[in-house]
Image (cartoon, rainbow, N blue to C red; front, top):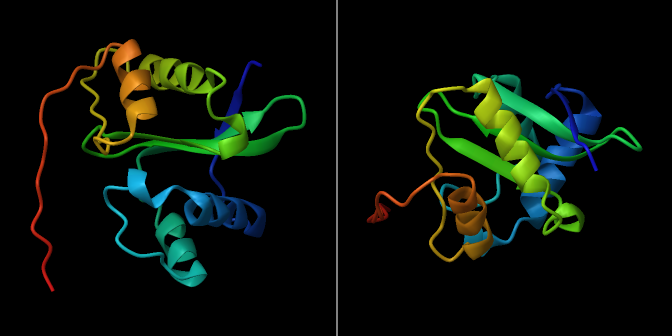
Length: 139
């Protein structure tokens, strides 16, 4: 399957899809999310255009979203695919697309150490381990 990409919109369809991805994400792989935001907060987040680069990942056969990717202003990469599309090698295609758009830029990926699938994906695509970060949660 050759993936297609499009800008993330603020339509109800896009907001619903992104929120459902967040709801259904395995909480053990999260690093930054402590609790689930309300749908309204979620929409505010995306409407603020939080990432300089972000696109929906589309199934070209039916032209519906199957995930999204982003790169932050600190060149941190995030890729999220719907669970039905994981384990099919699509992450490699997405990462190749991101690397092509960011030719010669240093990219980083913050990955939960227990997320072996993401670690393997990034390592197989030229990323290498540089640090483990520890946090003390405030009240």
